[in-house]
Image (cartoon, rainbow, N blue to C red):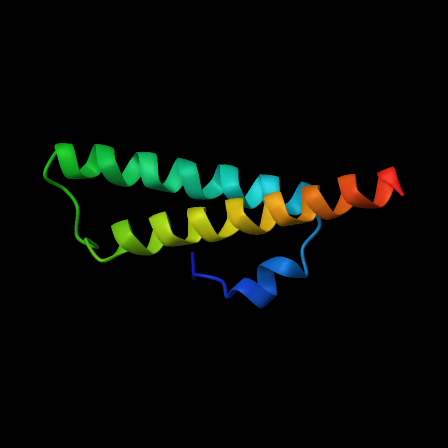
Length: 73
């Protein structure tokens, strides 16, 4: 999977972001297992996936805060 820019993630809905986050966590998990078995070929993917997970969580929290802020007013 290709990494996504923050602006691409901001265009997604909260539900799509949750799905994307699950996909990223699954990919990271499988990559870690491959590393433990000595089968990993794409070592550059580790920091890429971690950064995208962090980026997705950040944007998801921003969306949730904006939604919560809109409901109070």
